[in-house]
Length: 59
Image 1 (spheres, rainbow, N blue to C red):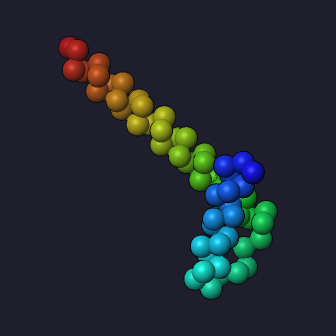
Image 2 (cartoon, rainbow, N blue to C red; image 1 turned 90 degrees about the vertical axis):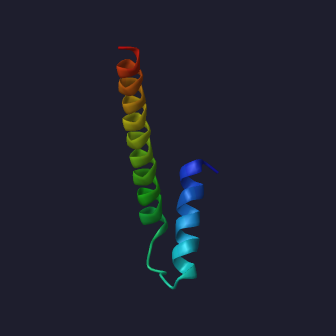
């Protein structure tokens, strides 16, 4: 089972635990993929900030 499928399953389980049962497998997988995209974007943004900060520290 891939990481996205695991996140999708956790999402469905967590929503079900609070009474939300209308999310389909496809919807939860799409949301999981979007979460991974957002995490990747955030990692890139943080890496760019670190790089810029390191450049300023050397000046």
